[in-house]
Length: 220
Image (tube, rainbow, N blue to C red; front, side, top):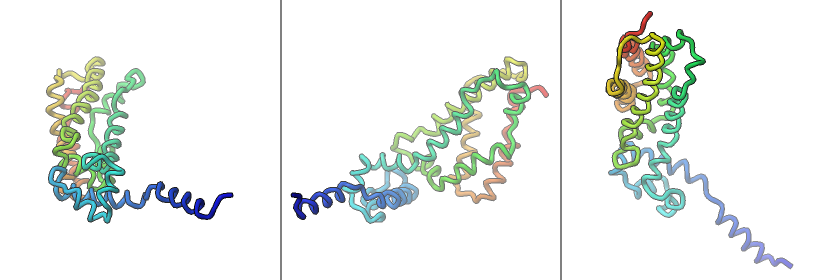
């Protein structure tokens, strides 16, 4: 016969084994605020814990350390950016008409603003990723992301050149340099905390400034 004490011990053990998920949101928010204020290198794990109202033991049950906590904060926007670029890489060009290829080289507000709005939806996480990441594995994120973009652009360029749509010879290094400037133009509004209205106007300016059709001397 199961005694009352045995039943109590069983449920006590079960309760102790259930993870307190209420800790996670406030821990991540506290970490977000600390990283935004001080950057990763100067961020204090003790302060993160105190502001979240949790013990350091609770943190180490969830994360190996400060860098893994940083990764948890920026992981969502990193995944979104990778997905955004994946959709533009590995394209089957045999399915695209010449008009679609031409259109891909024309920057328009309606096609660019969704990226800004997507990044803005992640609040401060994007700014933390690109501006507060020194000392983490994301330290070279922007450089690495430009390399990925360069590959995607180069594939579209090669196809445009093969079809006679692009007339200029543009090197891989040149694409990398131009896309470094392009990526910086995407990042800077977030680094400088532009308002939504300012960001929308910045997007319009970018669309005028980056004349990719002129870069590749696209036929009309």
